Length: 119
Image (cartoon, rainbow, N blue to C red; front, side):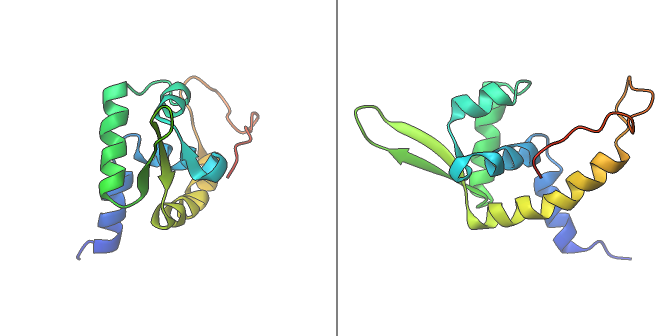
């Protein structure tokens, strides 16, 4: 049996730590865009170095783009591309599945406490 090359491609992106969460975060932002400092603040466990590497990686995949606005100070933001937006739409069923079957460590019964997240 041969592994599906399309799934292999998708998991080569999503199988790496932080990639899916960065894409999801940007999908929740106004204009699907955020500054480095916003990403760093809200993805609390990621280091600055790791975030920088992941953003570069996602740019190379064509999922996000780096926008540089020149004004009195240079403003840099990261924005989902159409390709990135389509991938985040594909993540919604995965998020729903995880919410239904999550089994977080340290919780006896996760079905009692359903958390709401923007999907």
